[in-house]
Length: 255
Image (cartoon, rainbow, N blue to C red; front, side):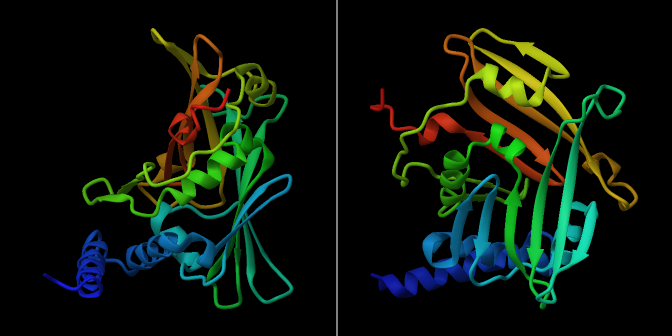
């Protein structure tokens, strides 16, 4: 029998080799190292919720240029901060079928804060984004990344929710979501659900050739027809694919 610590070491080594082979780029290796930190979430991360949601990195690994390598997109705003680092802000504006901003304006942002060594130390999402991904569900979905399965072909993580403690929270109602996001671009009517589709265009000064489609972000919100609750959010935000089924995190015994 292989001792547990040796077995764990072999597993990590194999996964590191897998991560490095995804594209042959070092940023995937750094992304994988960050993924490993998720196994000890409270040791390496802190969550702060005010008007926005912020994930703080206690031992930063990712560099600012890793995000450019991943998405081929540049931030809307890039400003220096007093500690010598940089503050990147990505603005996403709701658009119509012709990719024109709607009136009145509806937008949300994602902030990246880098230290003087260009490493990511905080990642924030604004209050409008939290209408689609409520803070409690956003935090528990991040925690579920620990132990996630790696899909080498799609370069995606599939989280394992069975190991997490379930949360007691209310799912957002459709009326509340629509009050903030307005009417969708399209509605798909299915037997048990309605899927509201929104388009948000990233305000970016530069997109690398061949990756123009990355700037347009489609968000799908699934509402239960019976109780009108938002139970799933799926979107593509500047190259970052997100899909969260909120029901998998709920304590079903909660009334």
